[in-house]
Image 1 (spheres, one colour):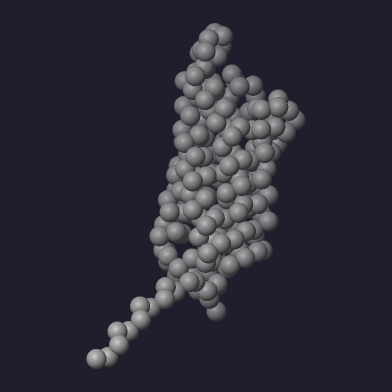
Image 2 (image 1 turned 45 degrees about the horizontal axis):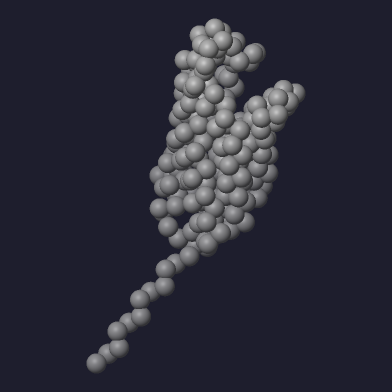
Length: 212
């Protein structure tokens, strides 16, 4: 039976899941002004930001472990880029509360505006790159499993579609998509403990020098 061998990326994948699961459900509701003023805004987003940074570390370490099949290696590289962009957006997201007074006074809100603009673009980028990574990893049996891939895909897709629909198009009926990130975090949590069953690429050995 396959056993899970300890690898550093697993620890960071677990921490990523814990951060998102701890922060996501704490996200305040209501209007933008009400959310920014809520005492849970900072804690919620600091935890989620920590989750994305941990996920980024997990992906980097996963790639550096080496021996990845071609398709997974490609999507792991793209997922690193997507997650780094998502973490950048999460910084502006976290500090958007600083614009609460300006929002209430009708003044410019640079941090909040940047956060919203980035969210419309970068949430889908993160979603697409992570979905590709999860599919490749499950198919080549090096991370996750086909039995849980649907969970991660559903969560990433829901979360990725939310800002374009809600922020970009103003379709507030689709705010229910945002909590999809919790489903993605559950994929992280389960994938942490699943053994890799697929074969890895072994670099070709250098040819032996001809005997003289």
